[in-house]
Length: 258
Image 1 (cartoon, rainbow, N blue to C red):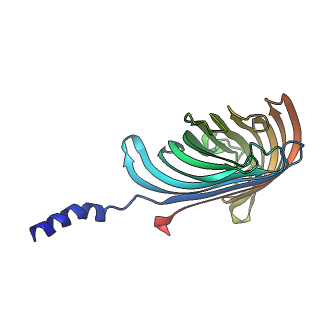
Image 2 (spheres, rainbow, N blue to C red):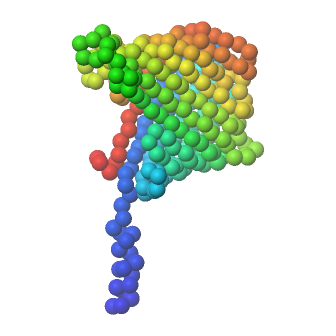
């Protein structure tokens, strides 16, 4: 009886504990670039995680499993890749830092890379009219809002002879003007943005950066738009100007709340 009671005491904390949340997300991006370097492409990721604990300084400890993919029709030898990853992050507000172990398949090379990757991500959004208190923006005005968004990632792959990408960064900063409020929480937005995608290995058709202007119908889950971009390919010493049609979708959830 005493032994049985001892086992009960040991098992009770484990039985009583439940994770804080089970956050997950799905992101997808498909595009048609009217230039001779990229063509039509699709990128995305599916992630399911577990928030285990709140730590000092407002940090949340999370582990996750994910699957990511990217493919395009032109110059895709070192671009096309897909595969799973397992990792852990510390998250605070719009920022997170962590590491993952990923298995990336490069179908055009017939090669697979397995590597430990350290990374930092951020995403944040503001209504700039609320921040600045601009009187000409709002209900009954021509301009309905000034959405400002930014997303980015920096990464470093630990020394691995099979690595094909090395250290890298990608992201964008976008300033919009919302002209119309549309049904289902959507709006008509014009914008100017700056985009970048850079890495240290196999850079020729991967590295690109430059500004763009465009128009989109933006909603919480789906954005559809058209943009004109000025892209620089530094390793090619070449620049392009072209139109791009795109569709972006994003969905997030917490399985604990379903």
